[in-house]
Image 1 (tube, one colour):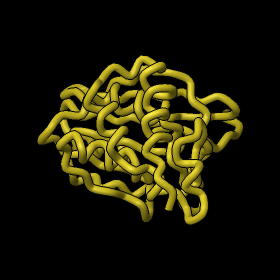
Image 2 (tube, helix red, strand yellow):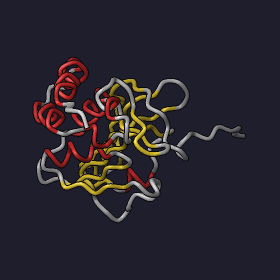
Image 3 (tube, helix red, strand yellow):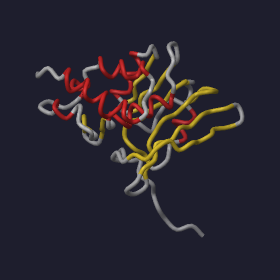
Image 4 (cartoon, rainbow, N blue to C red):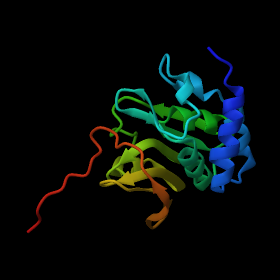
Length: 189
């Protein structure tokens, strides 16, 4: 495999830092983690491109810009517990920041509702954040996800408080929608 360390450094300098990702811990983790090992065989060269990379059928690594901005909004801290939903790269970055991470790659709709996570992140868009993912948040827990219905998606941050869950739009993003998470449109009477 080619040495892609220069491409990794260039990714942080041109796609992360220029997008107001000022958390130096995230920048340093992204400089150190070989993202190419998560890309499919023969596609390592795509790991640092400004595009989503399909790492398994219907599963994508988010653009470096999008994953870094989502992680910065989540404010991961050492000792927290995280859940990475179809998010292998985000999981590695969080682990580098001292977060204990569980990974969910099977049935993505079945996030463990009995767990209390400080952080939940998904790589790939959904029509709307599934209730199971919101239920997995501890009080003060944060979910970062891209919600997409049509061409434009929005990265959003959900935060659980004792009296409910708040939602804030962060930025526009355009990743593919994870299979089974499309919005179902219909008529209402």
